[in-house]
Length: 318
Image 1 (cartoon, helix red, strand yellow):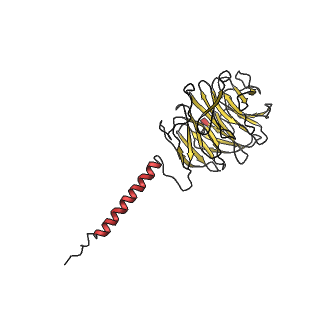
Image 2: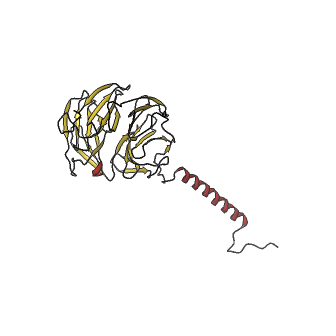
Image 3: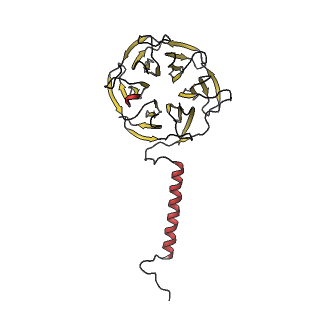
């Protein structure tokens, strides 16, 4: 007669089933860890998968330090870097289309595309803001080329944003710690901001963006905050706790921050709280080495410019 298992011993079938469950769970966990090596996702997190080699440029177009990236209505990607051919335009999959800027740009910093598909850049060495058409024809130059505090001068301007009436807002910048508003035609309107740490003051306004609520967001980098203004320059709020080198908005109106100090990308909610973050310092795809500025295309794929890494990365939204 076969004896029954003692109280300290499991039935063979139960033990086999338990081992199967352990193996299945181990495989599932391993698969998740392979997919998400640096983080555990919350239910509402957005997954971005690094594409790998991007862009695919000819050998005669080596990249220098990469400072900014933007997309246009055709999902062409503008790359801004500190080397020969500083403005490079590529297709969404990274194939070369055109380039320009050698004779006009010395030290690239910010690049944005307006509603008319014109390309605006800031040059921190020449203290100028330049506007080009999509083919590279110069349409407008703001600034005298000499740093200063006048209404027609900048001191290392960093970035550009556009209001609903096509007003142009410049974060000015490393030297002047202010925001300057111009009309679409380049006429001076007003300026606000002084150096400091108090609300409304700046310590390196490094990035600037108009959000979906028609607010002007200024990345006050060295104060580790974003300050939010109306279009008259009145302070609405400030969001603290990160270094906003770059600001971008996806098609859903969500705000993303390139925090180069942490080598991370952050997603904020409408009140400025960090609801998702990812990245770490490194050179592998999906890792960062001083992420500087970022942009989204119509499919919500993410593009990132890295200064120290001297590369652009593309992330596919999953």
